[in-house]
Image (cartoon, rainbow, N blue to C red; front, side, top):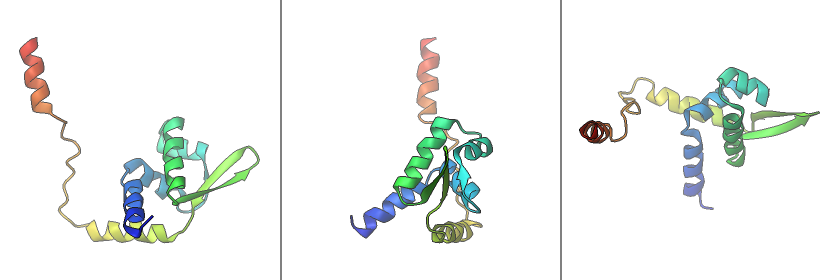
Length: 115
């Protein structure tokens, strides 16, 4: 796999709000799935999904201790990279456009016409 493809996969992995929250929680020390669920207030299946993606893409690693699996940051340099991007865009004028609804005008006009 070439370097650009790897970089694309890393950015796609980090592009999820919940994954960034998990990384922030794990950054200081390793954490169990139960701890991550409790702190993030996400469901167990959703946390497991995000942890699998983070592990498959080289962000996290695991350690088993008895029946528990603990997750930790594989290479702390990823935290430096995230902090660098955070600092770069801290005062930017990037707008959160995720609140706009997909096709909201079309849905309301077509739905209202049929009722």
